[in-house]
Amino acid sequence: MGVARGRSCLLVLLASGAGALHAPLYRPARRAHPVAIERALEQLVAQWPTFVPQDASSSKCVCGSGGTYAECCKPFHDGALKPESATRVLQTRYSAFAYRLPLHLMRTTHWSNPEYSDDLVEWAQRQNRNMFDQYNFLRIEPGAEEAGSTPDEAFITFRVVLAHIETMAELAFTERSRFVRDGEEWFYAGGEMLQE
Image (cartoon, rainbow, N blue to C red; front, side, top):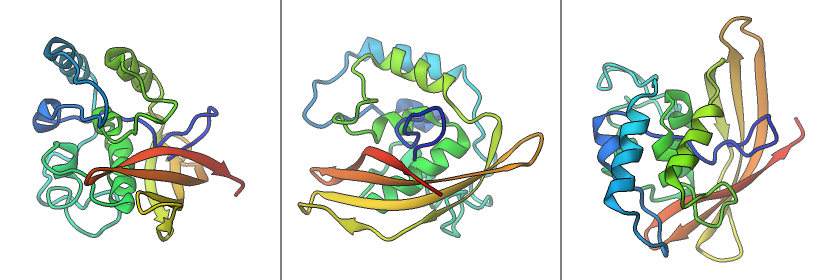
């Protein structure tokens, strides 16, 4: 999901909640990060606010699936499940932005994405500065998955509508995103903003 400030936004958001903080960052074809760095990252992110529903079992998930957060995106945010399709990556990343969960966005960003960084702490701090704290996430309108040049590539064009928390003025943007599969898991590889 990309947005203003000239950057592609559905790139990186951090995850929150006890389960999410213990889910290791997973990066195919990259070296594992030392445990000390993972712990430092978890401690850093634990200090930041989130907007996760307090009652996940009765709150509808903001991704628009119709299910509750507990049965929809939460298992992905907690690291218990990995996205099995480009559509699922898009849904879980949108809800991670809405709930302010940067670790999930980092876990679902492919290493080929320009936003990806091996310096996890710096990356997390950068993401924390670029959150959409002044907006409520109203809805996402995803298009159908489009096949890429290989079975491991897909594209989705989607529209996101936000509302400013004070003025309630709506902001909408459309992005065409590229997703790639590494093994059994799909990742966000980048996006291009489209004219509304």
